[in-house]
Length: 221
Length: 221
Image (cartoon, rainbow over all chains, first blue to last red; front, side, top):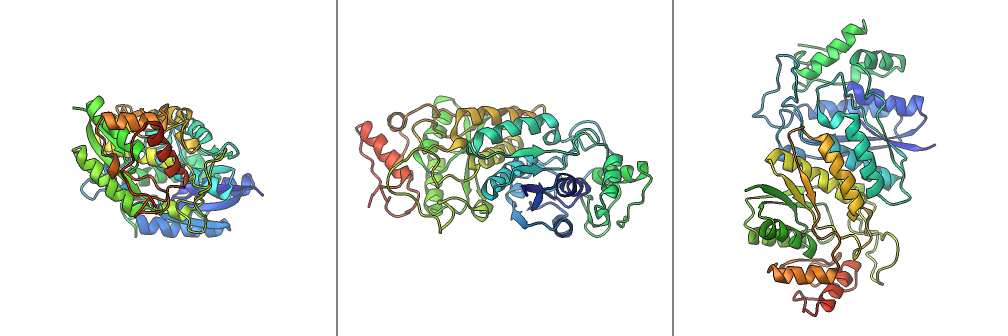
């Protein structure tokens, strides 16, 4: 069986993406998680561990990327920048972490090359999302070329983005079909005990469940 | 004055690259260094600090990337893999750190976006080098596209590789012209007190000085 590196944040999108890797595409899973000083770090780590176990991951790698908090510039990593709670607006929100997926995918490429994995799965969503530039398909395509050029000639790693054109309601429905343990995923940007329900990420999640006519089983404030 | 993020390893190439940024191209310097568990980490950090000070860097950022050692797969970070000392050979040597410059440049892009810098300088050398794929011009060009796509629309960051087509002797000569403090740079892969003189990096450095008819003032074993 071929191996795929799955970047698993602990949220719904990366959980479904990694379930596609395992149960639709037949890869063995190397589960990768990044701790980067985000406000809900501990909760996301726990969710990642639960998801990785449910995937019978052959290897679990969680890495300390606290340098991302040191760089700063995002409401997710800087306590002095408030997480917006008044609804999604056009443009790039202050929760954007500069070039985060560029960093994540470069590290995933290094892991894939070292471990001999032939694919990297990432749960980026382009349209029905927070509007981050590093979630776009054109970014992923460009980075694919860079990974092709910047690794050994014999290294072949394909970036897989199975959710990039899905809407949140489709993500919820697909996750239900594949028995993704959505109650063990976490989306809230700010709280780790009960989800706030009003940050952009909670709003997108709740809208997805609502439009899918399904109940979200995590606790909200 | 515009700002440039300069990735400074502590070696000759990145020192010259950052001197070009400051003294030829007129940028203010944000000096960036990465500690990633390489065998000569402490020595490289000291050399970086000396170079950054000689550049009057407006900001010095050194980041802990020890996760690269955790990933492993290179003689530079894994004590169980010996650094080759029997001369440069064709192909990619075991000192290659998987996709290291992909990781370094992604982090530099995040810093540049956060700090409002318009350029990133990296001292990659394509031909007269160790043969790492992530030092090629085609890799840099691909990653430039990925950074363009994966950052905010208003973010404009240009990757600069002033050494990419230079030979080592040209690097030594250019460094002398610009008064780069070469005695405060370090190239050896293995030793931090006296350079071994026989690893690939020492051999390339020594060949550069020899062909430039100049004396290398660091101590060798």
